[in-house]
Image (cartoon, helix red, strand yellow):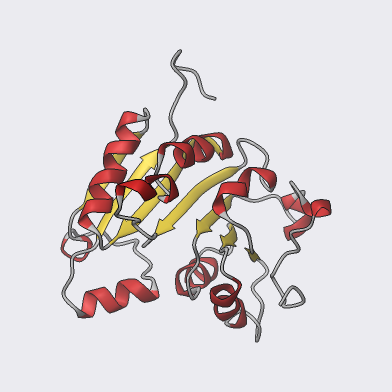
Amino acid sequence: MPDMPGVLETGASSYQPDWAEVFGRKAAIHVEIGVGKGDFILSAAMKYPHIDFIGIEKSWTVLYIAAKKNQAKPLRNLRFLPIDAATAGLFFPSGQIERIYLNFSDPWPKTRHESRRLTAKEKLSLYNKLLKPGGQVHLKTDQKGFFRYSLGMFIREGWSVGKLCKDLYRSGFEENIPTEFEQRFLLMGQPIYRLEAWRAATETGQDV
């Protein structure tokens, strides 16, 4: 699979790559953590060719499905990075990412698994370092409990939160790009929860 177009090497020599060199240009970088079968990031990359997209996925089995969809005509503005989100700091210099997408992340509902949630305190601290000033996290989920937890964590950690939707498809929001999970839940009549959070500031009010 490392030989598939768009799938990046993750050896020690590729830590903190020059993303402008990887893509052959300097452009805004958007990252999806947990690409699933790739429907969202492929659609986003096609819709916004002026933005460079990087999909993070730790499961090689799942990533293979997503990467295979990009084989016939590989998109120049799309790359896949087979890593755990917790190690993202090794691949992105601080303040480089403009937007992070968390689409239908595993909610890890048991209290003892809280640290594994992609909106746990440690993860938000990581995102805060990786994002540019004014950078955003866009979250979508079908899990009400995970949505409420995530909203509370963003607020508690000093992020600005807006564009909250408790039923995305009845909200009038027009810029949505669905994922494969989302389409399934929509057919089941389940509401989709969504929010946007803006990068936090330090205790002194200055950007990190």
